[in-house]
Image 1 (cartoon, rainbow, N blue to C red):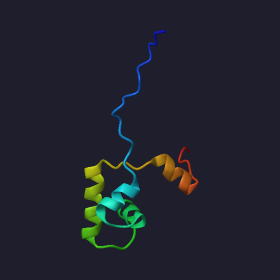
Image 2 (image 1 turned 180 degrees about the vertical axis):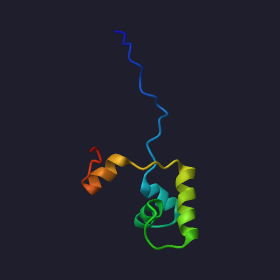
Image 3 (image 1 turned 60 degrees about the vertical axis):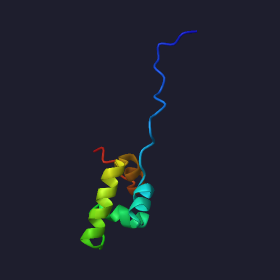
Image 4 (image 1 turned 90 degrees about the horizontal axis):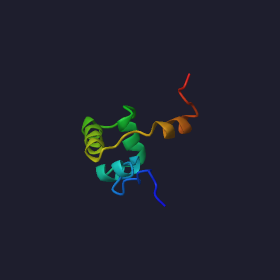
Length: 76
């Protein structure tokens, strides 16, 4: 039995989560979220440190998760 479908790559890494960014930056998940969304009160140094950690880890926001949380699809 031969299949023409390519197998999924084994080395694919799961996406970096906000929880992982927060842990690496030494802050709470809420603080990391606020820093990456440009909200909340924190020092410029903390905000920049979180953004640098997120970039270094390759964090990308999950727009589907954001839509579910906000109960908006942003489709219209």
